[in-house]
Length: 351
Image (cartoon, rainbow, N blue to C red):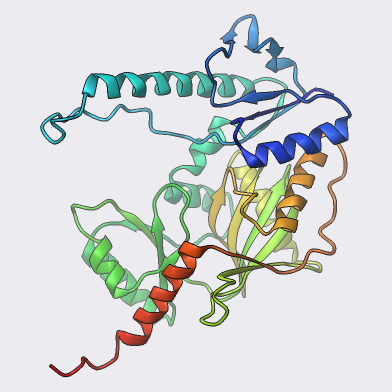
């Protein structure tokens, strides 16, 4: 079995996965540096796909980490706003990066049509890039998704929030692309985010139930985590992740695998709320972070990936316990949020 890894050489997750693959396969697993440093020899053509002597279209499986869809448009030069910038040099470096990215995109797209198990190709990343379209696509596939709108119109945002409030629910928001946590959409957020001079954001009503993220590989869910709500005490544990144990309802146990398949992904994670009528999806991540999870959970996911790539049964999540993830910056921001909530309705101090 020929298995390969395409990931930046500096990736901690890449190191863990590569070590796991080497242990399971008992042989050297090619690691192809996706940052394409000087000296990398690559070609795509009728004769096949080659990278430093490896014929990639002859591999059984290739795992891709650190690749993401990017808008390949070169920003317009505006020397008037940056009179001290050497635009020609900046543009030259940008073009070089663009050419490397374009080649990698072409190479991976070609592999999508080859008999290689590819985790994950550009088509899946492209489908996951525009978040509102992603939700619409899953909705058309028969899955329950957050009833989101994408807008920068203050009137529409206000009417949407009022309509949701009349139903006894809150509104959450996030950026329309990229990786971003859903956050409560308060009046202050609406005043700051909404305007014709600002980009549209996603708004969605909340759903009653626990917030969960399920990780799936080749249609099988290997780990489901439940987010504990942040609390004002114990700020050293800003986020607590609890593995969901025991059998889940059929709709919930299959939601991640189905959502990823509809998105053209072999591996990824699905953020959803386990609502009273079943799971409601809010996000699909084509390249979820693993190393920033609490240690045992990240190790479990890495082991599941290595086992699946090697053609072995993935390990069970038995024995995993709830664990916190610390983040100094987020703890500070959480403290600020709590202070704002405490004081925003307080009477103004006397003059």
